[in-house]
Length: 525
Image 1 (cartoon, one colour):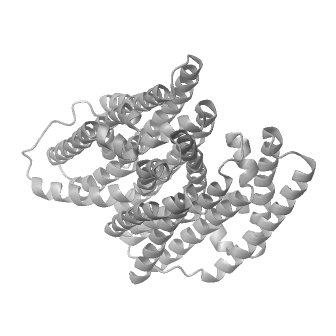
Image 2 (tube, rainbow, N blue to C red):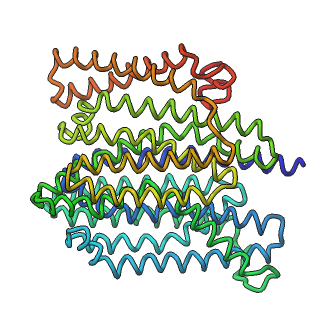
């Protein structure tokens, strides 16, 4: 019993370590896009964002997809078993991932010309080809991370994630700056930034290999003869990789759909190619904003998920419902506040980050996605913690299909606003069907009364922020970057304080709930 309890405590501590590392890497991943866009402009940003989803898929699979799968399979079939059996499981896992990595890499490379043609821009072919290399690194990085996670040792995974992202971001910004200065064209700059991204992945692999050599040298040997069925391991791998892998790719798949058909649909609708590239680049300004908002909203909520998973093992359903409701309520409070607050200050924020107000209406619509994406990611994690891994993967397929269909319908009619609407609607439908599934499984949200209070707090914040910006606009030119920056940052501070005060005054959270929220617990004390 004590062994099981210690293992659960290690799992919770490990999950918190990964949450912190994930928070750092996601902030870096979102934040670098702002100076990058400032360096390369909207067309340069368009070029990078067209190909980024392919590289992004490899990163997500090697970070939150396959390592989780490996950890799950190793825990199910290798925990407490002999080194011989564990070696065989790791051997099967590695070769399974190697086949997937090579298959994805070769397919992406071979069909790069067709993909670029489908996107409507053949200049992207070489960039897609270089991004294909990243899938060759996935099996190695995933195997290391997955094994360490199965041993409840999250430090190598966490450090490698931060190292990878840090080197990647640094290389992208430095190389793009000097390549622009040297007179390279924007497609060559895009090629260089993607090559820099792969260098970050290689750095993570080297770090993990060095750590492994120090700690596990001589412990594992290639082995396929141990007394455990290969078929059983492979079936578990296939099932877990499709469910967990797919559910981790929701956000990047939605980006991929826009990369595949937004530009081509704009051109087919009569827009000039240069203007269409600029328009897509402006639309892509929404990605770092959505990503940052989602990270903030999910970081606290997701920290409660390992606790839910541990309670499921002990069949403590009262505790599960309590933490599940707290996790969802926390997600809604932070995500709804971030989404509505950003909408209120979107124009000066657009000037502050991207130098002008172009596409502010599009960014306003996309800001609604912060609420839906945060809910999607939180509910997916809760369902996986409760043992329901299949439905999140299915809902991703549904959401991506809806996004593609709505893009082809709405973009020819409404232009880039249509793409923003299709994104919001797609995420919203995924949220809706996931909520219905949770209700069917007996895990409904019990905090419906608090939704009215949250809405009231949002109303107070938005009204006061609107008054503040109107007053500031009478005194300062908010299309000037310095004044827009002061207004935006002041708006964040004022809006955050007003919203936080309103949430506490309206007693959205009980005192006991506040005591159970990481970070907030310390502030309450």
